[in-house]
Length: 358
Image 1 (tube, rainbow, N blue to C red):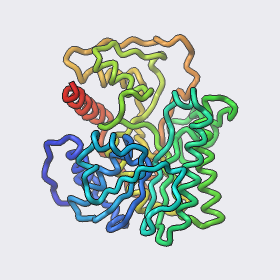
Image 2 (cartoon, rainbow, N blue to C red):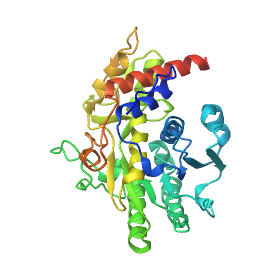
Image 3 (cartoon, helix red, strand yellow):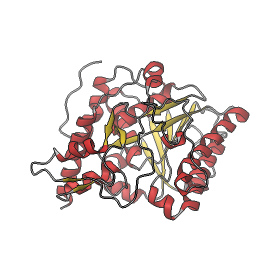
């Protein structure tokens, strides 16, 4: 691919780097109209950034319609995207939609309640939101005469606990089911219900649907108020520390940079066959103690790290790492941003944004 000029803007440069380092473009999306739910969230914003990049650098002429409950907040957070003519922001609740624009050819359904605190305090409405919004998107998809593909973003939680004797989870790994009556299983069960609905529509209605199962992510636009290890550690470090780890630090995760996520989702949407399933995440494992150290090194005055700060024994998934061989082989995808670089660029963005706010 031809060399692309550098940009002083960190996010813009991340977008350009994707095009520089990934030889294939999602050509089937050229000239299309895409409906993106959750498009104003952390990961949805990155989808819009990459679509804008495809339009600017390669004249893809993609249009996108984005339903949202409050486009005013997004307009303040990302005015450069909100003002773009090819993006239409529709203030609406997905569950109450009556129809979609008739020329939609692709749907990317990313909208979901995933905050574990909400699932703990409002499990009924959280479960209903995930399942009802997915069902409505599938119903409306049936009305579209030119629909080419619907990409349903599920979750790595559908696998349950990763067995200790397995290094990474493949798309056909289902050995770790949890108790469906356990409060901690409600989010996973909501996502399993969404996949079951997709299977029903695929089988009976022949609706073209593929499934992406995201793992963990980091990058600009991510809220540090979210209750995840990487966001907690970043916020603690920005506040001067210490970085508190509730467990012994041996829990293993993998974290993908947001620009890679967006690139993968666009390629899955463009090239995946109906009923196909792909893990979306980094195959690079990291224990959370090492993750805390990576974050600490971004500061001249390195904050302390304290382990075993929790009062309860951790009962969640000790290891959660995907196998992405299927995406590599079938779609030609790859990781372009290694973890240490992902942490460095994320911290640069948050520190700059935090400084601007202050």
